[in-house]
Amino acid sequence: MYIHLGNNAIVKTEEIIGIFDLDNTTVSARTRDFLKKAQNSGNVILTGTDLPKSFIVAATKKGENKVFISQLSPATLNRRKGY
Image (cartoon, rainbow, N blue to C red; front, top):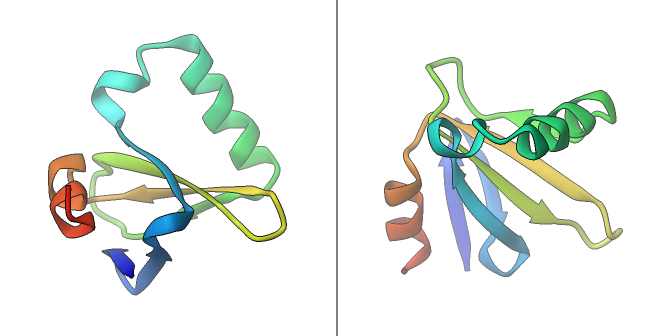
């Protein structure tokens, strides 16, 4: 099954490691460091131009992690995922 993250970004649900709220999680320095490293390595994909509300970490077949920045709330994404 697939989940639509916004602006034609689609990910397989079994590849999703986690869905995180940007407001709550970026308070932590570890999360900010993680996002900065992902950005520097080119593994961040923006799914829209609106104010981002969440980020999704997904594992690829190559063993890399992709980080999707979405304007959709974590609650909306979890409903789409079926939780």
